[in-house]
Length: 474
Image (cartoon, rainbow, N blue to C red):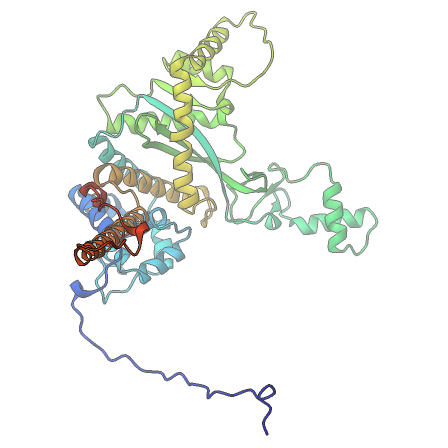
């Protein structure tokens, strides 16, 4: 007799059969469409209406062979691929190429037929190296002009703020500027000089901790990214990094200028280049406007010399002042007047309102560009390459602002969430209608009787939602 406890029934193992999909013909209008399709269609309509492809082809004509040459990546398609870094949250060109080959909506945005192949990531990288920084800056200016035409650029009140981007370089790979010696070899030499003939990794780590001065940018550099600087990031880690600084129109939220500078330069030093770039950009897109008349920044930009310079240029400053104690102004009347005027302005009602607006309109682009836009760590090396990526990424952020103003949605993910909300409202409406119809049937069947509804908690008046609840904004 078989013990039912000890007996374990066995099942036959099914085998996976490979079935080859026969070739078929499918009409393009019958292909599945995602929630991102309407967004990219509207964005392409916006770019085509403004002549984006013709503009970038004229700007990039000098980088291509006029008659013969290997078929290259079209400029309009190249810049659209980089814009995907912002809209899809992709940090590398390899990820951009993979996403473009995997998404029908992205392929439609790039203008690729179903049978066409997606450009390889190496082709994107080579095209980026081929086109210079000035052309990428021209594309940024072109997008800013579209915002100015839509009334989204005022240019009178400018907010300045900066952040650090982690470089695509490791600290363990740095070398000495004078001899080219690697960091591990340098520590090994120090250990042997101190009496340790064959130091272990633990000995080297202990010796490195005990060193009073280490990681100086004057002594060390990275062989593959000499523009990166050793600095402390926003999260407290020490790493090689670049510094990017934004100038934002505080009336509309448009980013009017962006610069990439050495990560070790102070805010009061980098402020000059960013303000000059912002003034140049605004004069191009708003030639008849009164631009850069007010500057708003945090206390890292407070400097007596900078306040005096901005006052001489006729610019009103709203820069938070750090606590420095009592100061002596004997013989520095101009500096005293500039500092006191700035202090008086930031304590006023408009100053407090501008500082609150600075926290909203300056921090939000950082979150969009570098957190959800996945550019907190750059995947390219060299300041020029980083500047190219940041310029096009910021142009995508401005396009998102324009799309949000015109169509109600600034990113394809926002449209996807809006569509999910619409479907949820429709489901709620269908459930309400079903409940109401069930109650109506019960009332009709129970006329003349003394029965109660079977589900009192579901019994109630039918509430119709307004038609505005079903708009997708696109």
